[in-house]
Amino acid sequence: MYKNIKFLDSLKNLEGKKVLCRFDFNVPTDEHGNITDDVRIRRALPTINYLLQEKAKVIILSHRGRPKGKFVKNLSMDIVVTRLKGYIHLTDHIIFVDDCIGEKVKKAIDEAPNCSIIFLENVRFYPGETQNDHEFAKKLAELGEIYIDDAFGNAHRTHASNVAITEYVENCLAGFLMKDELTYFNRALKDPLRPLVSIVGGAKVSDKLGALDNLLDKVDKMIVGGGMAFTFLRALGHKVGNSLCEEGLIGKALDIMSKANKKDVKFYLPVDCLVAKDIDSKSEIKVVPIQEIPENWIGVDIGPATTTLFSEVIKDARTIVWNGPMGVFEIELFARGTMSMVHSVANTYALTIIGGGDTDVAVHKAGEVDRISYISTGGGAFLHLLEGKELPAIKALENKCNICN
Image 1 (cartoon, rainbow, N blue to C red):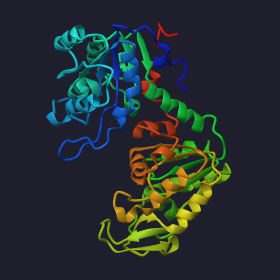
Image 2 (cartoon, helix red, strand yellow; image 1 turned 180 degrees about the horizontal axis):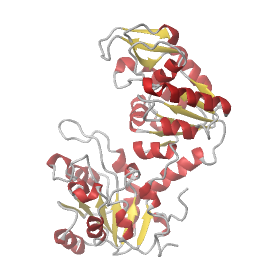
Image 3 (cartoon, rainbow, N blue to C red; image 1 turned 60 degrees about the horizontal axis):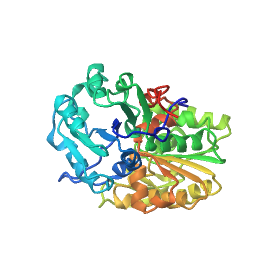
Image 4 (tube, one colour; image 1 turned 90 degrees about the vertical axis):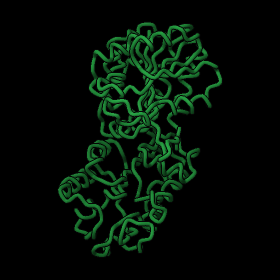
């Protein structure tokens, strides 16, 4: 997948070069506008520092939120600039420009010294960004001589700053984060050490149908948990109370289980669950076998027997790919199953790859970040890869570098 892409480490002699870098700095913030998780900023540092060491001018393009083509003050990139300054020690020159195209931007870039960062305003303040507009892309392309895409979290989008722009910059490459993402994904699903186990959770089967179907062609074992498990349990004839269940996908759930059987993929569903009267931290709760989910109660987490079962399933795994939590872990009362699975995955000897924002949050919450082999920065992009789909922003980089080693 994605052959003939060049990565940043194949470039040398960048002194004075204007290098356009697309990062995904769409960081979460609290109600006061403070950044609550800056992992996407920190993961961009290897690419930024490499370019600074090479004495390039680093011109940063990124986005925050969905401003729908209009200026929205609380979605400005200025808070990211402030946080980035705390991590960068190779330059005293970090300049923020409150626009991303035009003469003012060009002037700031031209006047900036080598080994500096020119951080531009949110590209989504222009409607042309999400429309993959070529005129907007040309204006972005005029700002630099080399283009680096390191925004894996946005790679499943066909936007001007990551797809159309590659037609107007002669030399386009992928950054170090993009390289890591593709390398680990290929290790997990292209040529994995076996047994290969997938853990798929989250709320809806409809969100993961493509991934489930594609993974069945690759894995040895599949674990399904979270809200989506109740559609499969309903397909097997169990009553699921008021648990999340997509009745219209029961046939699809049966097809998936049938495919698993035909391919001799071991398929695991919960055997018990935590149920609650309401999705509320003060709700009455109890653990029941899946055959005994009470009417009007809601399944909110896997139960202790399921936790034990799933932990045994992954014990001999050599590769584990996990996307989606086991329950409504955002509420502490319903988090035990997901937290237990994080610890179990961390305790294996497998190559472990986590994808999806919620699963990432769960790993951090459980304090097991350092014991997971790789945590992807892309929720939607990671899911697209699990589905076997092409990522348009990465496809756009193929055969796009003429000065690489």
